[in-house]
Image (cartoon, rainbow, N blue to C red):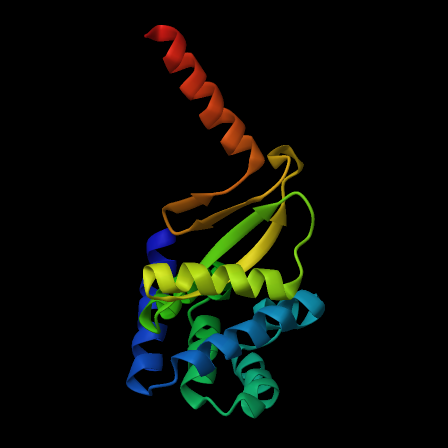
Length: 180
């Protein structure tokens, strides 16, 4: 089933690139995802077999018209017509990764013992952005096992400035000293 999500994500990205609207499509996805989360009845309505596809499509036209992205709306309607709306979340995860990469943005996580202030997260993101020459957006997650400091994971890169890591490095050096 993942291949279905990837194909649809690739198609949506191709449309967004063709229109030179990748960021707007990302925003539209965020809007629809939030709409589905805050109003699960809306999602149920769009997937209901008790309501005709033409009625569900008319609802999409009304609700998503303010996005002013006709091809995005057509994409949602296509998912309804082909009974693929159940794959929406998976499609969007794939689309988001590919779209962010297309505009030079990478997502990452900064782990810390305590919640970081927005300015701290931004500062760390700027340092990593300069290092990898891409725009980095970080999300803060708490990890009490770190003892102190921060660990940043962006893609397959790990930047570990935690107290736990420093203790482990010190232990390794001491163990190596004993072996000599």
